[in-house]
Length: 78
Image (cartoon, rainbow, N blue to C red; front, side, top):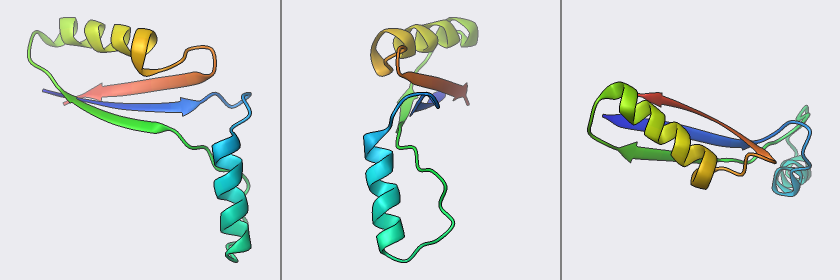
C-alpha cells in the first residue's frame, strides 16, 4: 500500500518560506493572495497489516518526518 503524507507549518507559527513565496507572487502581479504556507509531501510504499502500518506511519511522522512543535501532519493509506 502507499502512505501519502502532508506536513505543513502550524497556523500560529511564522513561515518565512511561505512569506517569501507570497511576496514573490505579489511582485509578479498576482493579487488577492492572503497567505502562503510551504510544507512537505511524501509518499511511502509499505507492506503489512493496515492497522500496524497506520501505527508505524503515525509514529514515523511524530518522530522523524515532522517537527511536532511547529508542524502538523496528516496521512492517508491507499
